[in-house]
Length: 404
View (cartoon, one colour):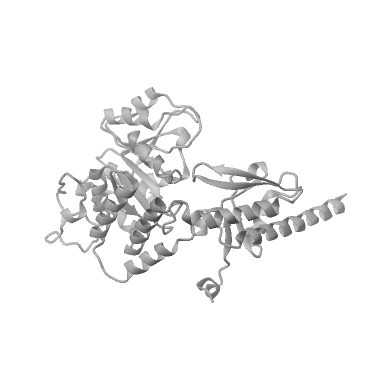
């Protein structure tokens, strides 16, 4: 009996991909092995973070890294560093930002529900531009002595300011630029391009295509900024007399906070040694065995496409999800005569339970992402999907006949 059977929790065929609500992606055996080994002994987390940061920096080709409990935590910590630097008094004060620059500028077209990760640190978001266009003059006017950072979320459509343009303007005023790269990295080349275009900090998800433990992320950035992240992660039982501040820094330049901070906002975003070890192993595997862990899911996608392709009522086409850099299937139900929301709910509550992507549901199309598909899922998905559509179609026809 599995732990899920014991708890009475139904497993799900995950056609959505690396969604937090579905627990993310399966991890490889090397990642599991690293996590088990990490749990078997004790280390100083600060030393492990510094070592992991060096390894990740080398693997990813970026200045410096810090392991976080997800991309949202990386955004919060990156914002916190922009607000406080290594000033321990400011670290103690967050999320109260009285007396410090606390405004984070963002283009209106790039607003997102995940902005809460930024305001959670105590920042105030300042919008510039319109839903589909932003002018350089609008950014220049918005930057003042109250500005702590500029947030960039790539991928939004429109005539928007590029990261390079934003960086040039922000840096001229001494303002750092934070990039939300949660949905954009991997591929690693995008991450490296963010820094080439002037980013100071980039928040990355570990649990998406890197296939690290779901509750992991990476904050990448300038070494002096990454060094300051650790100040938000201090234990409350660190004594001032024995606190080894240098152990927490991985910067080419020495930095010396006036005193050890107290309980920082990052304390609620801590990562365990097993998460750090799993993330480093997953990124190493992604870099040195590219595509290895995606093959099984892609094979299941092929099976699903072949078996559903024979259905007259459903149009099955291959697509590509640019943000996650992965092929997907689009299932067009617009000719089935069945309400798509009813289909989604029926699949989610069926046996087996199936989760599908809903980004295009508004136009009658479901999406299947292969990253979380397991061996056998393609055939099981096809059978359950066909059975569900047949049942709903028959029920709809009966209802129409009764009302005629």
